[in-house]
Image (cartoon, rainbow, N blue to C red):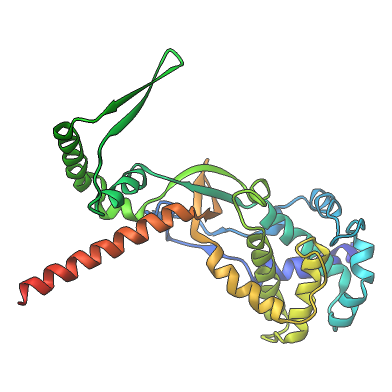
Length: 306
């Protein structure tokens, strides 16, 4: 019994000192304020089935080789032993496995183009004073495609005028703050597809850093960075071991740019940590529109003061 308690020392410490706790009023994934009926911890790793987590970890292939991750390999790894200091390798293995699983299964949402974003695609083109000679409609009836092309100048002008006029109802401050989530899934389903793999690396490293900094009374030196980098390597985050801590600094720098995060997601009465994966096209369309708006406002203000 004592051995079991000892092995869980780091897990227990993490859940006592490193939890992200929500209380009272918070914002949900739609930026709306809601009341939390009771204290809620978003990263309570004690709720994770350890045996299943180990199975997940042991399916990881290390680097470019064919070696599978295991508790024995982790504990006896030369680099881990070099940088672990007074920490216990078995306890650190157990904590690392649970943290990896927590992040690996974190809910994520993919941003897709909303009605407003689709509108902005043509809006930006029309604002460039281009000449439109025809408008083509792609129609489908009974699974048969039939294209209709309009080339009458007067009709084209009326259609475009109507299109631009509807913008005041579509491009609103609220719509510019909201995003369309096309899919909610777990992070492992999106790695290598819609999500940068470094997203996982970053969150894994951050949780390990939180623990080490707290457990070591604020101490977080180059040695701790080397330790985290080796853990990330063993868990398949890198193809080869890091040569220095510049890799860690680069990961931290990249991590802040990779994600747009919101505090939580309310799902079936449960509050879950939630990450939104940006859509580059959506980001670009909205940025360009805001720049155009600022340019027009500056031009208008300049005319007033003349």
